[in-house]
Length: 136
Image (cartoon, rainbow, N blue to C red; front, side, top):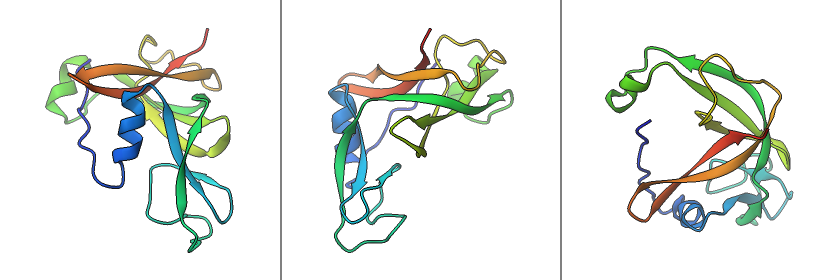
């Protein structure tokens, strides 16, 4: 499936740098010690003035829900329809969510509640993306 190549900005650059090193990081609030993703300037929970820092996480989670994309409008992905789009919750903090197409899982066969782990795929020279794969 063709993948979208990320274009990092100042806020997301550390995340994508870590992905290129095959590591998964999310922000952690210095004030309330809560994880958050996607990145933000401040903590979404306590809005602490102490700020946020990047923290490496294990890259394990569970499938909370999914949909099947049958009529998406992205030209690059139309040939691959239908495909899964799963909501993955991070085991270290189930309030942190990621989306993934679940490579290797056929459409409509997503095992909700199943364990997943992060994987990395090269989408351009020197650029990886993170995805989630069902753990057998």
